[in-house]
Length: 121
Image (cartoon, rainbow, N blue to C red; front, side):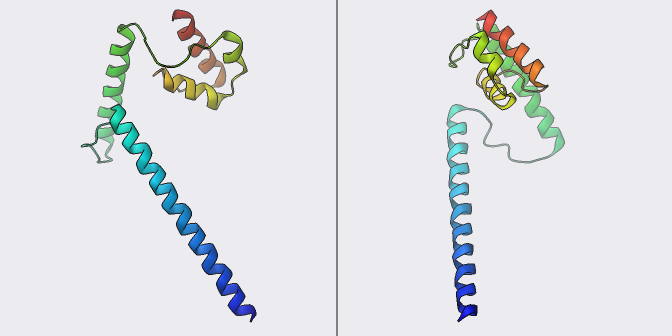
């Protein structure tokens, strides 16, 4: 009787895990479709070699510089100084991503970068 219970529990756990993985795959596909429709990355380039990564980085830098020249008109809401200073590093990185800025560095650097951008807006 115990053996049957254990097997049933393991099967239920395996089914639950499979369902979660399937849900995660669907969510990832949905995010990819949204990113593709927004033009975040090139669909045709799916190889993972270092030279391709370097090319992607160069392309991103070119896009960033061209967007900065166009007046920095981003969709993200304007943040005030106090709100920015209260943000945690993960929140700072999200805000920087929305504004298409570099997300490398410690919290102090990220805060300074975001404050500088918001002041220039």
